[in-house]
Image (cartoon, rainbow, N blue to C red):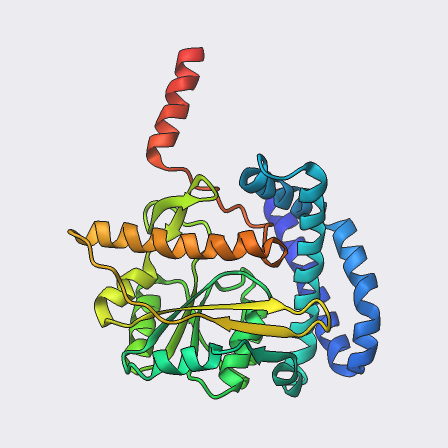
Length: 320
C-alpha cells in the first residue's frame, strides 16, 4: 500500500510539473526560454541522480574497455544536457510549430532518399532510435507533408499520454501505440498498405517473448522483431532515419540513408535473426559515431537470454 501511495504521489508531482512547464513554455517568448535553458538543465542534472547512475552503468557496459571514467562522465553529462534541451524544445516548438521547420534541414541527398523509398509504392519502414531529438524529427517529417506514423510506447500516465497524442495529431503525426500488440500490428500493417511511412525505434530492451537476442556493443540485447515481421508481410523497404544536433547553431540535421530490402534466409527465424542483427549493427554504428546523441539512461541489457540466466543460476548453485 505504501509503495502504491508513493507511486501515485510521484506521478502527481510529475503531472503538475508537466502542466506548469507546458503553460510556461506557451506564455514565455522563445528567447526567454532559451535564456532559462542552461539553468534548468543544471538543476535537472543535479536532481536526477538515479538516472545519471543508470546512464553511467550503461556506458560502462558499452565502452568500459574503450574509454576512461572521465570520458564516460563527459558523455553522460552531454547526453543529459542534449536530452533535456530536446525536451524543452518539444514543449516550446509544439506551441510554435513554425520553429519545427526552421530548426530542421535535410542532409545532402537525404530528402531524395526518402522520396525514392516512398516512390516504391509499398510503404516505408523508417528505422531509427532514441537518438537526437527524435520526437521533433517525427513532427518535422509530418510537417513537411510526408504521411508519417510512429510506433510509440505510451506514457505510464494516461492523462499525460492523451495530451501527447492530441499534440502529435494536431501537428500531423499519427501515433501507433506499441501495445496492445494486436492493435499495434494491425495499425502498422494498415499504414504500410496505405503506402505511408512507419517509423520504428529499434533500440529498446525487449524480452524473449516478443523479441530476439542480438549483439549490441558486445552484449546480448533483447530486441523487437516488429519491423522485420512487417517487411515480411508487406514487402516494404527499410529506410534508416536519424537526426543530429548542429553544435554550432543548435539546429538539427536529418540524415536519411538509401532504402534497402529484407534479406531472406533459409527459414523465417533465420531471416528475423539476421535482419534484426543487421539493423542493430547500423544503430550501434551511429551511437559509436555520435555517443552523446543516444539515451544512455535506458537499461538496454535489462533482459537476459535464457542460456545466460541458466549459466548464472548454475554458478550460484555450485557456489552454494
